[in-house]
Length: 301
Figure: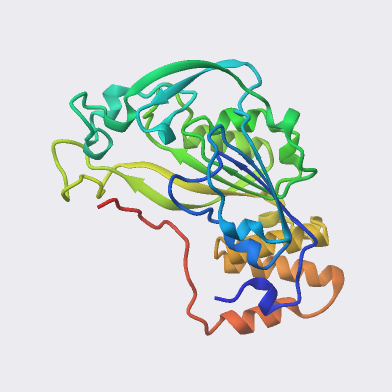
């Protein structure tokens, strides 16, 4: 599918991204393709230094990587697990982990990659206090159960954010961690609307397993990536500025395949600046074979 700028004459001045958690383990950023077509300002927060995609070396991309651990700004304890990408400000719950075969297959302890190996006292920062990106548009979160802690320290930053992608959990793999329902309530209070789930994952509860690794799920959902939109995108897009409409339309088309919302945003944009953006867009997509990113199941073989 073409990017939005190839379909209609739309080109935001700058798309501003805050990425907390840095990168999903061993996978590219979902939004990385934006760098091929638009000017990006990306600020990443990740205590572990990671190699960044080559696509970010383009002249149209300004990338800053920071090691701050984001939460409430207080001293906290970082729970270091055997698999470092599963470390969290919340301690893994071995009772829950042992119930799911693929989560606990490593070694004799029965808690595998979630085995707690060390606890380190660390300073945390509030995003509102350290963010160097003025009026960001897009916030991505993946911090192993502490996403709501980050959001609570970001209420001022959220005022300009249009789209949030966050990992959410439905079972407390970490002790006392907030779950999807907690995040949904908080973000509704901040003026956001839940949009859709992506990359839904579960695991077989023991002793049953559906494949060799136990990584294929037929029943219990454990976590997913959830997309939240500023409420005006759904209810009153005419209240957004032309730049906000253009940014939201580009992200929702290029990254999230929310074509129906893009049409609504383009109608609101053309009402402000003129043109026939929505007709041109609909003509392009109505006979196209459209990709979907909606409630897709991720299995680990």
